[in-house]
Length: 303
Image (tube, rainbow, N blue to C red; front, side):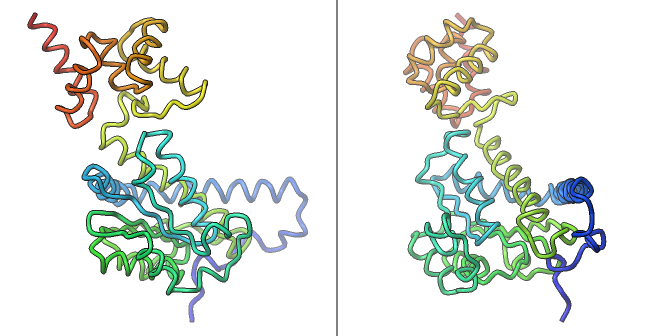
């Protein structure tokens, strides 16, 4: 039976343990760089997958991730940052992690082999038609991830698969498959390295593209961030100031009036009469700031 690419020995790793530390570090760094290059060829599929995610979230559905081990950690990292960065409600984000919460402090391999748990967790999360599931597996054959994706399809979810081995069945099973064809690892089979790096980059692209589609990014600014600490409050004020060319003092005042929400604060700083008027503009434009600003400018120009 052919050995999966993720399990093969990298030719540059032969005699690795005999090399001086600086040489080993250079090889590891080079492998990380090579892993990063495999994402761009899949950018079209990533963009299509982002549309599935955005469609689900826009209609009030949920985005679920299903994975085990290192792939699960990549998924968790992406999922946890979406509410703070893009203001996506936490209740719309679901993480199915093989082994559950206990695996976050004691990561073992056994849970990923229990296919029934993938099905069980999809059912327990009450995922249904209108939701979207992303299954991540470096090998493309992890029983937990494969079974979770299969259960999601049976329940009518849109499905996305991310894998690092060409020909992985999970890529064909999903509505959209994203192949990240990373080279064999410097430490054979240690997919927390190259494969994990490529997965994290792909997930960054996937969720960011979805957020842009949803109108949570304006000129490179995260206009739907949740400002819950001093750094983010300062960032929010800077965003309002930069977009409307107003002073920091006015930006802070508009943010306070908007309850810390950047989009209505921008509209207030741009001339909206009050918070109700700002919110009405956003509601009428699908919560997208740019068309709301255009409408506001048209309204102000007509007076």
